[in-house]
Length: 299
Image (cartoon, rainbow, N blue to C red; front, side, top):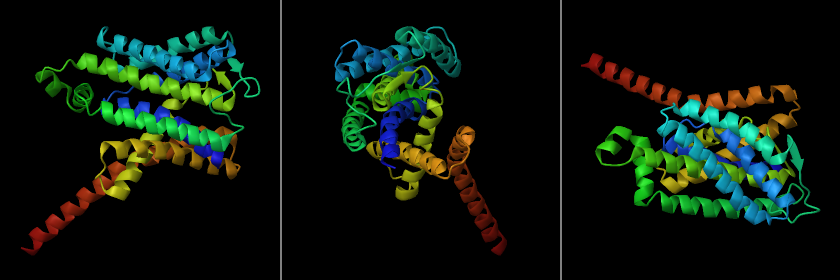
């Protein structure tokens, strides 16, 4: 159970990056699967070559920023659609990650290096990751309250209106994609240290986990506070969503269900949470309609 919480917190950092593009920018970015692995690959190789783990994480973030800039360039400069731009970058990153590590998997041991987080020290890893999250959420809350942050929010809300107000929406997209993938790669660097290795496939399905965290957090937050959620609360609930997702996965593994069905179950969980807001809104509209018809009939 504590291991699932630790993983959920680390992936919560990644989910914050997904929230930035998916919810704030309204951009379907599939670069995530590649940039998470890039962050892990960069961090592990730097540490193996004598770089301090903290500095390795900073470079991982920078590598993620570069990945986001590639997607942004494909979309804004070359006119490639958001989904396809992300897919192209993701494919390219697979080869880049192989070149970074020299092979598909690279191990790193806490016995030989002073890693920031490790599977061997779960309680300490949880505390350190929470500190990371507090800092990241605080910076995001501050940044999206600035003029530059508002341009990103305006671009995601209504790009045509944003353009009419003189906002350069392409610049806003570039900034958002860079920051988003930077966070994803940072999570990849932390996760590689936590599990003791980096793998070219470690980011496979990351976008599904990120979306699951965003949707679960949103549904849970609105169920508790009835849509009276401020921005910082939404960010916190994204992290909570990631933790819940991993607790559910932990429960499934505890039930000893076939391992090959884990991805299927994950997809079902995400689909259910995606459907909840729609079905809730639909039932509310049906209730209002029936009440209106009933009132008209009584007249």
